[in-house]
Image 1 (cartoon, each protein chain N blue to C red):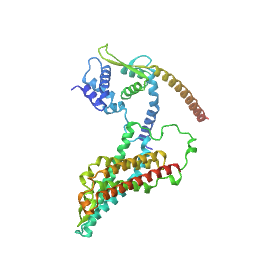
Image 2 (cartoon, chains in turn brown, red; image 1 turned 180 degrees about the horizontal axis):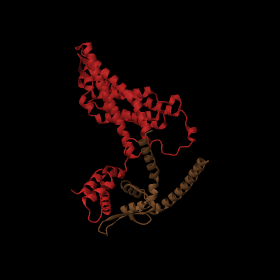
Image 3 (tube, each protein chain N blue to C red; image 1 turned 60 degrees about the vertical axis):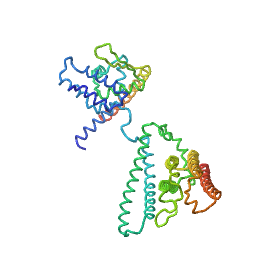
Image 4 (cartoon, rainbow over the protein chains, first blue to last red; image 1 turned 120 degrees about the vertical axis):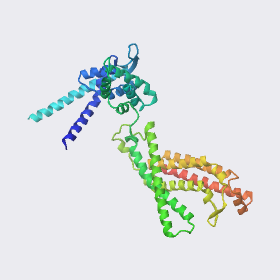
Length: 120
Length: 317
């Protein structure tokens, strides 16, 4: 395998790995109403970079699925669309979060075991 | 030139009308958020670069599939194509050969006829190939977008189902031959019906001398006849998908036969259907002719009846 191929393969695996976690990351920021750009910035602050062309469609899909609700705020000079978790969304988020914590600790144990075996 | 508006236009023109306005507003507001207070064109370009290609942005917003036929239907699609294509090509070939033998008037040399035939045959087969491919694909593309579920492929599979898998008895199976003759019959009926003017009658010197039917009257039934032909083809496709006789198939078979026979009977009941010249030639009295027509009608009713019963009998085996 060429080096270039290796890099693209790694890149696509990373993308795949991250894709599933993005929903959780976005949901976690929506306990209080947020608008799109603010969301990008707060995610970026925690080191999670998300393409804007991924974020807006994702928000729309979550709204369609009933996990978030949106409203336009036109009181300021620039109208902004705010998203916030719905009742269902909060439920789902808690469950998803628990699932993530479980997976992450399981994976942690698994990877640790691997390290120990390597050092033997 | 306002780059922002052009960008938004490039995104929204790829989206359904109903969501355009809202998405445009949101994009405009986001871009505004990303720009510093007194933005230069350089700033605008930087922000748009950050947003990325409008095509990609629009793709994200789209919620209909970006493929023609998804995994849910692909298996059925390939199966149907594989079964239908050889049959359709063979039927075309047979019809084509017959038509050419009938048309042969003996003025061309055998060599010329051969090359002429070869050219026609290739273009005819190609035409059938494309048409079959197109229509079957179209049906599946529509299915994909209407979200109909076929044979519960989405429900959770369990090993218990293996106990329910019984290879249907051989007698229940629908043979390739049966499918083939079904489609051939439909094609022959269609050809005869739509070309009755040139094909059905007493032929003298290579031309129709005494036609059997009043062509205008005959052809005035075209919507009904086309529908009957369509149900015949749909029934054959259904047979391919199921593979063996079931009660449902027997019911579908009955629906088709009742409808097709009704169409034939309705046509026979029209006393202007038979061409006057033909009546004169036969010089039958009105009553005898009506009895003959009734007999023909009865023949169709009985053969349809037999096929219907056969369907239910095979489903029960």
